[in-house]
Image 1: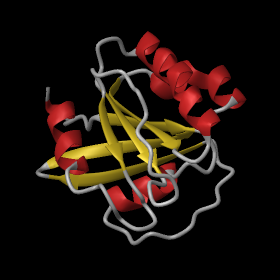
Image 2: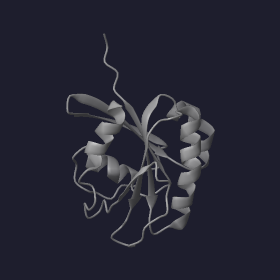
Image 3: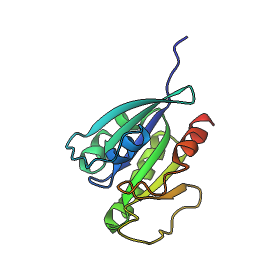
Length: 153
């Protein structure tokens, strides 16, 4: 029997830190990443579980291809830039769209660039939130543990 690896969607606007987050989860050092690709797929084995990370750009093109990208996900990680309010507001729409195809699926919120802005966002209590600086590797201590807990449910 073929083992299926949990699909984890990472969604957010351009330049919020999605690809840097994936690099961190894969154990790679921080490196500024510029990407115009709509989706990149990565795999990592963690605690004998193969995880598949889908790094998905938000925006207009995402809205037109949402079903293809999102269906069958076990977890959604939404990423925003704390220093750009619009990226935080867009998470509301991305979450609604994600849950349309994956109802009752857990969501983790990553508020990135804490090193630039020290603020707290009033967010839905049912979601697990992390305030991080991917550039300075701050606030990420329990992220992989939380991801594993959520996909195993």
